[in-house]
Length: 173
Image (cartoon, rainbow, N blue to C red):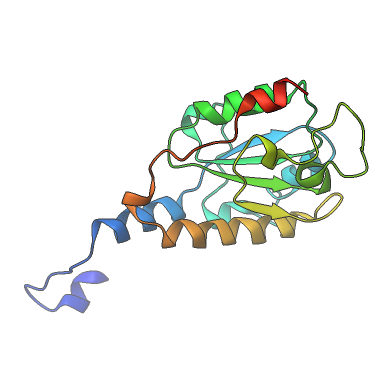
């Protein structure tokens, strides 16, 4: 039955800790949804039966950062909101990843004003950008697959705290 029939007797399997950890991490990515504006509706639509984000092991959207390993920032981030988004990111356990969903999140979009951050990469390390205004739910699912591939290629030793952009740059603007 199953794995036992492939081993035929007293067989054994060899692997590495990196391979097991990568498989476990990429198969159960738990998103922290940061739905700030209109892109959040498309992010929510990724959970409906038509798109079914559960197929990828990511249907558990927790609103507590201590249980998440993927932050999906969907929408326009203002300078007033940036420290809050960064604080939530800092509360997430390592390793963690970030998807910038939508034109406003990636570059400020059509809002070229003093109050809108012109890209969250000014205060967060972004792993993947999802294009669109707003991006379709299948674009988000494609980004999730790409994040899973990235997680599957990483090693346990790669998860050391990296230097993050300085939050004081955001707070002084």
